[in-house]
Length: 140
Image (cartoon, rainbow, N blue to C red; front, side):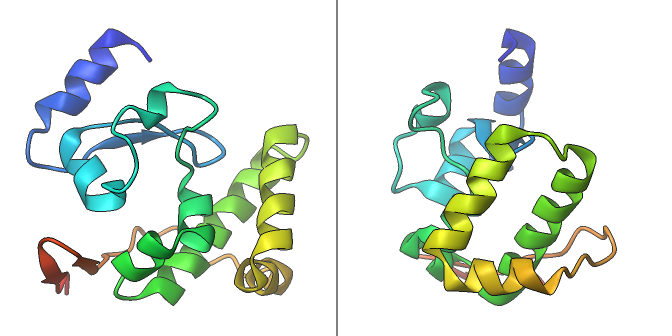
């Protein structure tokens, strides 16, 4: 992570900001993004490749994340669609193949969504959260 990118993320202050890698790994986050999305994980986790958070894994395998999204099913569908787009762009990526295989084996919901081959239009959704400290945020 370039130092200038770290400074830029921190400059967002109270606005959640994170950098996500090709396979949905969290490469960096500011304190607000960490508190919103994964306060149950160590803040330094993105800096350690062996414990780096992964958005797709969190969505499908982490009970805290499942509770976080008011429309978890929508987030799950969008996450699978994102992975489909990434897989089309990088069909020979072994890390992506490993992630998809892991999710297929460990999440029946992921396996069903992946098998459906659904890829919606690339329109960033608005998300509503149910945060354990802040409460419900009706994003709409």
